[in-house]
Image 1: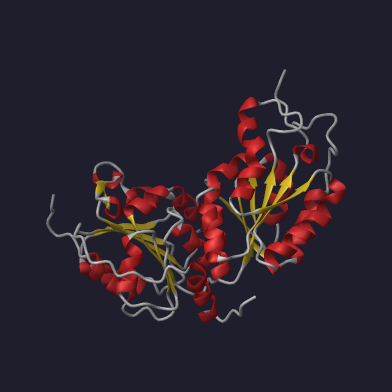
Image 2 (image 1 turned 180 degrees about the horizontal axis):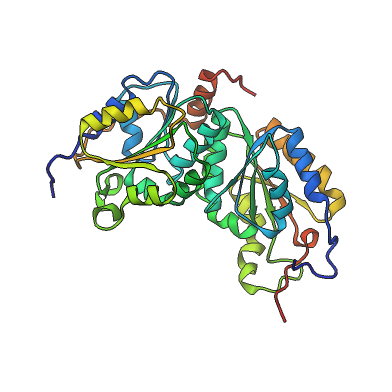
Length: 180
Length: 196
């Protein structure tokens, strides 16, 4: 792992909290682009008997997939990293047009001690890009607030058809370091 | 440049949907959506007016949610090229009830007929097969289209992919509704889901 010494948690259980919320809301399709911050949650999803983890080649596929899932009567959630938000922009237009429940969980890069300058341009604009695309943003910055943030996000996405992104901050996840 | 033996797109789509029964059909952004409407509006038609590149993935999401129903994506070569990675995603999930038809006129008909990659280099059948969709084939005759239309109803043997070379005739546009929420909720209603 590449977690820094000051990361909040070295063996985090907040992905379990997320999984529990998704289960309670009867989420069935979980498209994702592999990401270190989501690795534990992805493992839980792939081990689940009720959820289907669906690896994508690019994040925008997940937006279209969730539209189809809802047309067929199933809820889904898109897991991605902040850089993936940039890949989604045009496909996000489907959400207000089709008015389907959209929830995405975005692990953040490019903030809180980022070492890789290439992550910063997208990471630092992720929240504004998401909001400009018509998706509301909730943020979790520490493990203790994850359950409440997830509950609020899932409720407004699935019950009120309010497109929602949960930004899982780099402070929560632990900044990646590859430096010598 | 006209080529011999190219199929008529409206005839292809009308044949695919003639005995559709419970098929859910998704059209791509562009003429394929008009072709679906020309074959007859239907509560289970999912027309795309935007989100280019998304048709096959909408089909995958639907197919996974409704594994007992045949799901048929009918799209164009330009739209499929934009979402080519989704063939890899579909090849991995292998939804047995999903069929994809590409109406390939080797051109971007909506925008003035600029040639597409399939006119010279890209082989979508090869891509689909290499992505793990074993039943991938090129179709050049109406007899093959008719056979495929029957195969779509077998929800245990997919996914399947066909690339149909069509002529580049510029046909009158038959436009379906543009109201996306109506389109999606009409499908949900037909499947028995209540509004939220």
